Length: 358
Ligand code: SAM
Ligand code: DTB
Ligand code: SF4
Image (cartoon, rainbow, N blue to C red; front, side, top):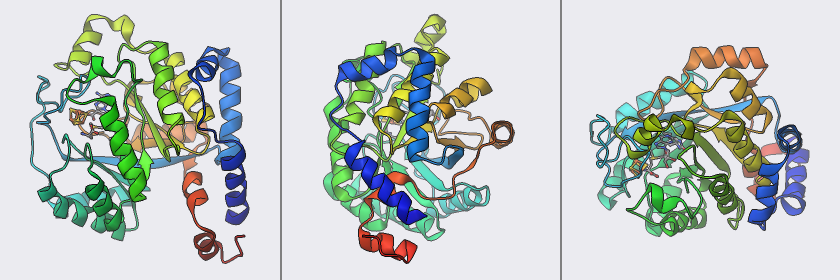
């Protein structure tokens, strides 16, 4: 089963997954009649993924607040007045305890975030211990620590880190309206360092920051034209936090809040342009209706964050997610992500299947 899936996905990778998308083509997708766009996205989805399985990931803030960056959406920026208190990096043992709880609750992946511009070299030994400890529990590991130098990406790869999350956040033209303390190119440079180290790439962004549709087209275009698509693409809806520039702007101009249908269009565009990626319905889900979330799953979203809390913001919570999954007939993804099984060498595939993978 896995063998034929792997071959199919390799076929798709060669014949179907393109990284030469033009902005005009992506704009055309966004412009399709909604039901047509949804149908196309759902078709691509079921060609490449088990259509009723959704990956469950758990998020933990391992170092909260006090971040020197000025990201206009973020409660953890030292420039914001959000009331989030700065903490030190959590103890390794505490992080491992939280990972064990997440595993007990059925989570496949443990994602850990730090409010840093970049990790300092002196932070790396503790980070490496955390990665090794979580991996030893049999969970997939993901870290998001800010910008990474090539040697730091190598260290994380050696520790066995599975994924690194680093969002491009929006299209290139809108970026400096949201963040001034770094450039879009800085994000792309880190993504390249992560890719070169062999760690799987998780990169997405935020919808509903007052950007135009063209900025959303630019956001998807950046990801879909990377030399290799990210294995995971988180699509966040802005969680408006009081005391942050974007949260306050939305409080004053609620009309700027993203429309559900436009959000679903963005998910669908991600699914169609990056067929093998896991598309993660990330922040903002707790304020979305069940119907809007159902449309996102139809449009190809196949991963979520579980639990009551994201990094600092509230999340939907396990009880309401269990009820939603039951209502929609969705189950937790058990298998491996298609983009990862495709990346395996024939020898690795043979080990998995016990069959000749040529
Ligand atoms: N400091 C690291 C960085 O910026 O890469 C890692 C943590 S940062 C909080 C991770 C991502 O969370 C951001 O890139 C952004 O896309 C998302 N995020 C942060 N605050 C958000 C908010 N209020 N609403 C939606 N997404 C948010
Ligand atoms: C991502 O794209 N979304 C997650 C994860 N990557 C690290 C973070 C969402 C943060 C939401 C705001 C908060 O909790 O402070
Ligand atoms: Fe810092 Fe990340 Fe928040 Fe930006 S998004 S302020 S880099 S924690």
